[in-house]
Image 1 (tube, rainbow, N blue to C red):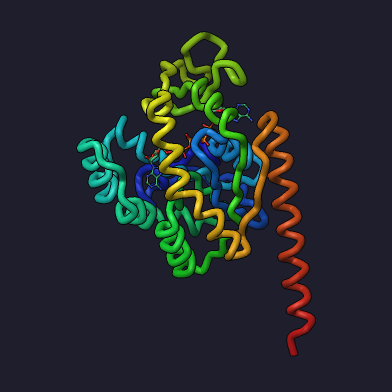
Image 2 (cartoon, rainbow, N blue to C red):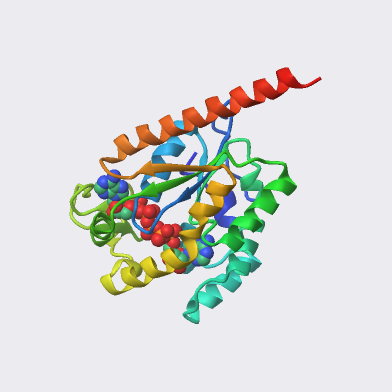
Length: 259
Ligand code: AP5
């Protein structure tokens, strides 16, 4: 399901093509964590396990830069990026609103990069409330800073299909060429040391408070992002399994206690 994100990239009305078998219970998750902790990598693995769709606002903005904007909000976001400005909360919220169909999809979703501020989190809550959709959990991936910096420094991304590699932990078969589409592998502008420092500061100031926000809402699940990707996946699925069992138990209890 991860490979066909037409609705996400082009706007909610776009056709996502042939339906993949739907999961019996859609997973609806927010992925949190500092830049480079491995959210995108885990999102891809989780999508395969849970048959949900990977919805990344970072991918959306990068694709608008490469292929042009496809909707009014994306056109404004592209113009802001071309002026060198950060994307405002209002614009990102509008971008996501244009794609509400992706959030109510029966396949479920893994939101990566959104929300990024408490304001965006409140907007997401409103959108989901309007759609009568409940968020299962916010997964917070955690890793010591020096390991994060090494993950970001070694990352290479395919300029054509956005596939992600790492020079030492996940190298391509041929140097600087994507295994999947043979596109050129490049270092993202924001993965250079001077940009990494700024991104970490922005993360601490604007995104870290979300951990507390979701903890207060009873949705937070902390996951150690140390080790290889499959090990982290197993840890995450275990956390989600426990959460689902607890939710099912409390639903059963309130049903039995109801008059
Ligand atoms: P975005 O793309 O969301 O960037 P990010 O949150 O900074 O996250 P990254 O993509 O950098 O890292 P990741 O955690 O996905 O790590 P990955 O799996 O690639 O956003 C980019 C920009 O867009 C933002 O800075 C902002 O300006 C703007 N933006 C986006 N959303 C916005 C919003 N809502 N509001 C406003 N602005 C917004 O892994 C990193 C590397 O490590 C890879 O090379 C990978 O191969 C390797 N790796 C992964 N896991 C492991 C492992 N277990 N062991 C060893 N190596 C690993």
